Amino acid sequence: MNRTQKGALLNLSGFLVNIAFFAYLFITIFGFRALPNRAAAVVVLLVFAMQVGWGIFLYRKRQSPAEPEADERDKTIMKNAVLVSFVSTWLLLAAATLIPALILGEAGSLPVFLLPFINFGVFALAGVVYFGAVLVQYGREVNHEQ
Amino acid sequence: MNRTQKGAWFTLGISSLLIVFMAIIFGAMFAAGDRRAGVGLVRFWIWLVLLFLIVALFFVLRKQSPAEPAADERDHLIKRNAVLASFVSVWILLAIETILPPAFVGDAGAIPVFLLPIINTAIVIVALLVYSAGILLQYGRTHQEADHE
Image (cartoon, rainbow over all chains, first blue to last red; front, side):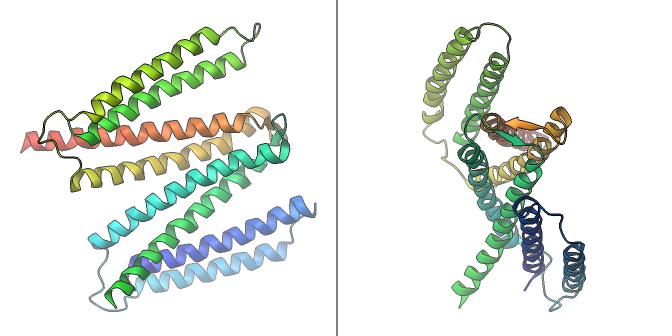
């Protein structure tokens, strides 16, 4: 596993933890109309700290002395992933435009405090798509080599 | 000028015209008085966009010389870099979209649902503008480097 793959794996897990935490916040605040539990924030912070620690260890420790920093193939893989993530961003933005109109109606109003949730959701899902696309491309290349 | 450059000029022109078009509509929506005050200008702009589309598409699709390449490896690289620049601009615009409404209507305020398509379409158009400008800037740079050599 090279540095790009390690970074993608780490970021993917980080984004998934963030999505889970924001989903919890959203459901607690808007579903149950209650304040979120502080213990949940502590758990997420601990998970996040573990991820950062694990990431620094993986990132600094080379699996072999021949492991390259980033070669031309890595750059191509990352640029393809940007394209995939970009397309997914447009689809998510279209959904973020249509869904409020379907739920609230054309004459409805959207509270502004929902905008950070919506846009963070789009950002997090685009991030998952980006890092997922990086890992899928590496997986495909390994399969081709075999 | 190859097809990628012509395509970038085409996108730049269309996105600039559409930004002005949206600004006209937006201005007309919130203008006091007669609701049909800006209709004439909107109609004129639609004709202008259509005329630009037809004339520009002719130049984009027509080859300037038989030796003009459709797209080579350098074009692909330039396009990918432009996609990256456009992608970054989308996130900056989405951050602005998150921060600006509370500044205008307050944290407890609300925005009409019909504004969302306008805001997000504006983001798409600005992203197109950044994409095409990114392509043209990179070609400009490559030409300058070639001139220096």
